[in-house]
Length: 178
Image 1 (tube, rainbow, N blue to C red):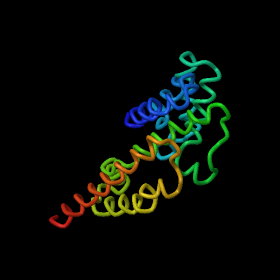
Image 2 (cartoon, one colour):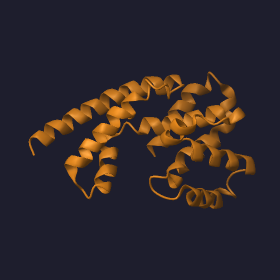
Image 3 (cartoon, helix red, strand yellow):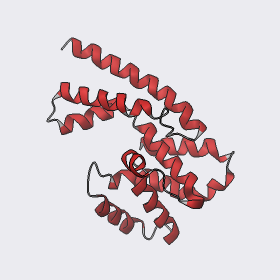
């Protein structure tokens, strides 16, 4: 739900600069809510998208559903690094809002640790090392790699960056005592 919260904050911050995005509010919020339900880290993406489509078919217009599917299937960090940004025409800004919200939620080091623990049979030390490496090689380079275009995400990412660095330092101090 952090992605939805960040998407809302970005949307509200950018709305006064680009009022036409108000037309895409439902797409933004829906994409932010459902995007992890088809994440390749957790499941087969195509199956997840089919389930999402079935669930949303009577809740969104045909066009809104198509755009939502396009956003959630192209917004992941790995997809963007591999293929670049898709061309979604008039929906491009809606795409960036959701994508940036997802990137901002990636600054949660504890969330990353839990994911890594689950994939390392609860080996705390390896999970910490992998999470720290991921942050050093990817998360802490989001700004350097030009992944944020909105003012809100550029500003908020710097705050989250500092908080994540502090959290890693805290974990390192705990690990020393273990």
